[in-house]
Length: 210
Image 1: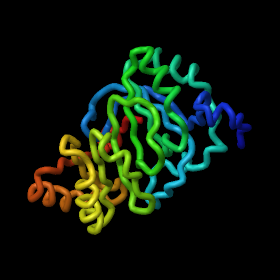
Image 2 (image 1 turned 135 degrees about the vertical axis):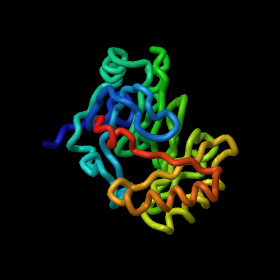
Image 3 (image 1 turned 90 degrees about the horizontal axis):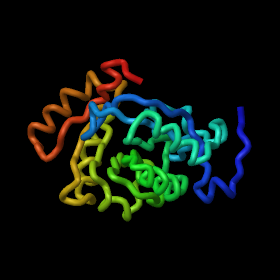
């Protein structure tokens, strides 16, 4: 099903295509184990071949939702929202985050950083991708750098990206889920030799939490 977009509202950040939203436990990175309301934005042009939510890529098949409704739904469940995707930053996030913060809701962003940074965020998880690198402007704002390890070359990529973030940014290596049995021992070995990195796991998948 294709949805009709009011592009004036989309461009103004008053409506945003939403693939799904749900209350769950953050499974990855620094805030793993924390209850949060997730809003998965529809639309992504980065195109990672190992992406586990490829159904998020086409924005036209996800309904545009007004930001007032998004915030209202978050408020019913949590004072912490994780905006993920897809790629949230292909849209203007300023009005949405302003409204969330006005309602005392903490704002966390998960992004590839490949598009202009908009919005006000309490926490930014930057997960760079080789095929569409982050814009330079976002590196200094990242609270955590999460690099997905799919093959051996990704360790070199991770080190290159780690040199671009601030000294306060937390560094995480996370195995790509389909390769976890092969990659996990390599990550453990690497982190033991390079303790400036930490291991991130998709614990929600192990626990079978949405």
